[in-house]
Image (cartoon, rainbow over all chains, first blue to last red; front, side, top):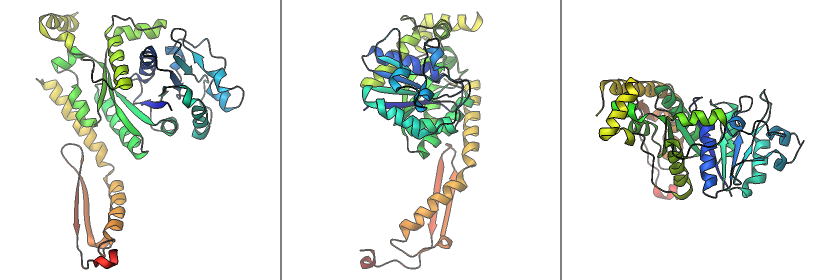
Length: 263
Length: 81
């Protein structure tokens, strides 16, 4: 049976879709079979970040409407035979109920090790759909008051629904600003949200490049390392968490901080 | 070491989280109280009027529950069994 993980946040724009894709790629590299599902109906972007927007023939709604089998709607990643996506491809939000989506996911559950569910922002229908098909949730937050606030609300909602809260990912963390005290600290966020910290992902221009041109993260990038550690933590329970402040410590780190601040 | 900006940010965050939680205590109170009465009635005769129950926001942004029960009669052991 697959681990069905809902990637949620409450607030939009914190990086759920990007995390879904890059975490999926990292898990797939660990020989885990991964299916990504886009539940952001109408405002879908999983296909774009995965660079499969031109490859969609059928989507999840075609499966719901009986126009195709689910296998026909699932697209394999061009780069990794362990990674698949079940996209959505409508410019509107069709009416559908959780039961139909649940049945689709149940039908393929035993074929995958992980099913990562890209949850839409907010706490309404889309979120409820995600809650109904997942068996655990990872909450994504950025080190900003508005994001932590919305994550706090979404955690309460997840608890009300009885969802297993796997942990917290802090995305877009600027190590230099955290060290200078110009950004909320990691410990502060973890204390207030009272969830175990699963991973820290740094603010990294490489991610923007990846989304712009499609493809994979540069292996020498901080993000690549951070995602690798996150995937190993999820898959094998390893304790390593990326330290976004490490490169800004010490003499060289101090120079990097100053360059970042003033250039 | 935290600087002034980080301290201000953390205070604002705490304030926001506390305000958000303060909108919910009545709902939480109602749910908890009904369950407490059910449990207590296994051992004693109590009604809603005998219970003074409060849920307050504490300074960590969480909740503190306070419960005072005026019990007139405890049920005997064989009543429970």
